[in-house]
Amino acid sequence: MSGMPEMYPLARDRAESHRQVLNEQHKVLVDFVEGPIDQSVPLENISAIADVATGTGIWLWDVKKLLDKHAGESERSFHGFDISAAQFPPALEGIHLSVQDVFQPFPTEHHNRYDLVNVRLLVTAFPESEYQKAVNNLLTILKPGGYLQWVEIDFSELATDHPRASPVTDTWLKFCEITNISQRAPGVIQSAYQNAGLLNIVNRPFSPRNRQDLLERIQKWQTGFYTSVMPLILLKTRNVADSDAANKRAAEILRDLQLYYAEGNVVDTRFGDSSAPEPIVDDPSAQHAPAQLDFGADAAELALAANRIAGIDLPTRHLDR
Ligand SMILES: C[S@@+](CC[C@H](N)C(=O)[O-])C[C@H]1O[C@@H](n2cnc3c(N)ncnc32)[C@H](O)[C@@H]1O
Image 1: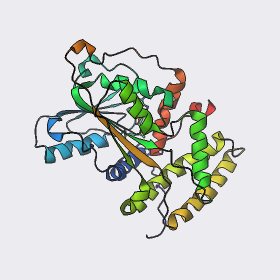
Image 2: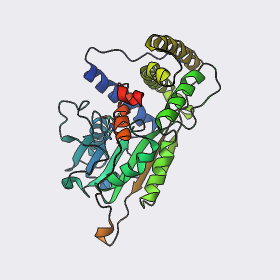
Image 3: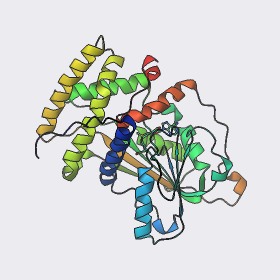
C-alpha cells in the first residue's frame, strides 16, 4: 500500500466537479460489484435500457459500450431519468435524458418499454418507508420479462470498535437514524421486490473487506464521501455547537480515519445488488399498472440528499427537519 488516499480535489466549476466525482465513483463501484449489469441478466435480450436517478448518465454510457461489445451492435435505446438535470452532461450520443422523479408516474410512452431498468445509489434520497413505492413505480416501465436491477449501499456492518474509525462510523449511523436513511437498503429492496410479486430474485452482497485488489480505490472513495458529509452530519447529530467546531472536529476524525486506512483497513461500507425479472403474466391487465403515488413532503426533501453520496451538498432543509 502506498501512502494515504488523496482527498477529492476542489474544482473551480462545481457542476463539472460533481460530474467528475460521480464518474470516478462509477468506475470504482462497477469493479466493486463485478460489472455494470448483474450476471443473471441475459445480455442478448436487452435492447431498451433505462437508468433511473442516472446522475451524469455514466452507467448508461458504459452499458452502451458493453452491449455493443458483448451482445453485438444492434439498435438499442437508452434513457436516463433524474429528478434534476444538474448533473446531465451536455450531450451523450444515442442516450436520451429527461427529468423525472422516481415517485411520480412516468409518461405513458415509457410504460412497459424497457428490458432492463437500473437504479443505483438512492439510499440517502428518501426514508426506508418509501422503497416499496419506488419499486412499484419502476415496474411500470419494465417490459414483462424485463429485469429490474438496483445496486445500493448497505450500512448494516458499518459499526466498528476501532478508535480511529468509530467516530466516523458512529456519526454516520446516528445521522441515518435521525433522518431514517436505511442502514440495510439491499434487504429492504429485496422485500419490496417480493411484495411486488417478483420471483427469481438474485441478491449479491459485496464487502470491501474481501477486496484487497481494490483497497486503495475504495479507501479513496470512502474518504471523498466522509470528507464531504462530516461537518454537516456532526452538526445535525449535535456532536458540535457550530460550523467552526464542526470543521475542526471533522478534520480530526478524518485524520484518524487516514491512519486507520494506512494500517491497511477499510470501513465496511457494503453494497448489495438485487436483480429480478418481471414475471410474464397471461392476463395483461394484471401487469403493474401505473399508479398515482401519494408522496410525502418529508421524502421530497430527502430526495435531493442523494447527491450527498457523490459529495454534493445536502439541502439545508433536510438538516432542519
Ligand atoms: C448519488 S447520485 C447517483 C447517480 C447515479 N445513479 C450513479 O450511480 O452514478 C443520486 C442521484 O439520484 C438523483 N435523485 C435523487 N432523488 C431522486 C428521485 N426522487 N427521483 C429521481 N432521481 C433522484 C439525484 O439527483 C442524483 O443524481
